[in-house]
Length: 104
Image (cartoon, rainbow, N blue to C red; front, side, top):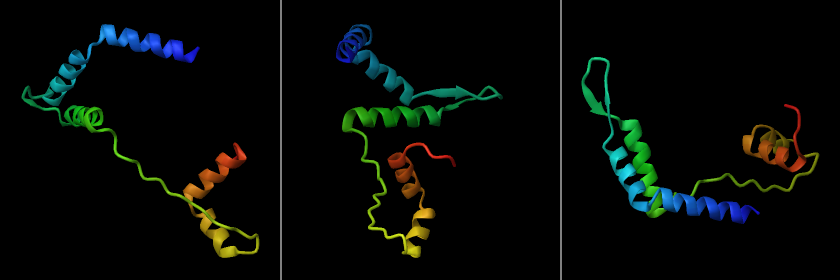
């Protein structure tokens, strides 16, 4: 059922928003400006950066996000490893995912 919904959404977007229109919107966002309180027109750097990031993602793909990989053989008597795990947000998050929701 999801495939049918995804296909119908893709088809609707393809007909309502052709690729050329999307490209023009991104191009316009790359030259976005904003009017300040004093009435001067300045480049809208936040919008331009978001548009540039989006254009690069479409053209070259998103960069690989770095992830911390934690592997350890742990014995209950090894205090130094247990201290390292207690102070590692990645290890705590991995244990929570493994064990399910735990109270904080």
